[in-house]
Structures are given as C-alpha cells and as structure tokens.
Image (cartoon, rainbow, N blue to C red; front, top):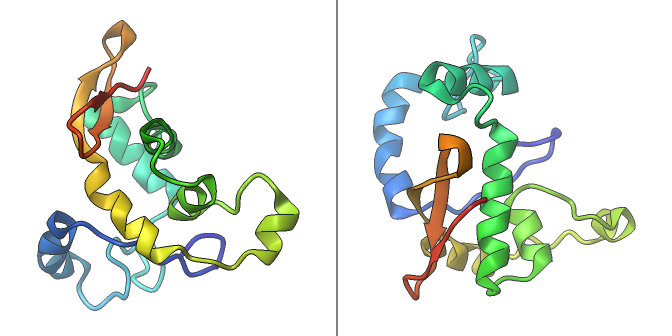
Length: 143
C-alpha cells in the first residue's frame, strides 16, 4: 500500500520462497513487515535506519533503490514508461493522465521480474549498489 492505495506487486520465485519464513516473524499481521503496531506497516524511517545499520548511511536510501530499478528497467528498452512507473508505485509524470489511467499492467510487470536479477556492482567512490542483468546477460551498471 502506498499513499493509502493498494499496490499489487508481482514477486519472483525467490521472494515467494522466503515469505513463509517472514510470516513467522510478522505473526498474525497482514503486513509482511509490520510496524510496532502490527496493524500498520513499518515506516520509511524504519527502512532508512535499517540501511544505516547495514553500512549504507549516505550511500543509499529506499528511494535510491527505486532510482536504481528505474534506471535498469529503462536501460533494457523492453518496457513502456507507464509500466515501469506502475511497478514502482508511481503515477507517472503526467498528473492528468495518472489521474485517469487505472491500468495495472500486470502481465508486462510479471515479465520484468526475471529481467532485473539483482547483483552487486561497484560505483565511483567505493559505493556499492544493486544493479541488474537482463535476459541477454548484458550487465547494467548504475552510475
């Protein structure tokens, strides 16, 4: 859920495989990552501080992962901008079009999942970040 709007996200086999283990942590909450109040999801700050504890302070944020994903998907040339924006829970840059376009593009979004297998790449100044490979095996570097 983003901005109080349900957001359907297709998941990879690997993500689906760890859901049962996450359920043991989440307990009876309807959220995969519940907050202190199990009726609410974790906050943006919870995710940000988790990244800090993992050593990514000043190197990456939650929105930074969105930027990396958007860049990788754009560089493949395989997906329409509307489909990429919907996958990232964005309405698109045209607010009027976004207000009327309710398409979820689920079949195309499912095809994105194997396209961006996550790996690690080295960025300038020693930062490391996620990047992906598309089906041809060509590596995409975030810079």
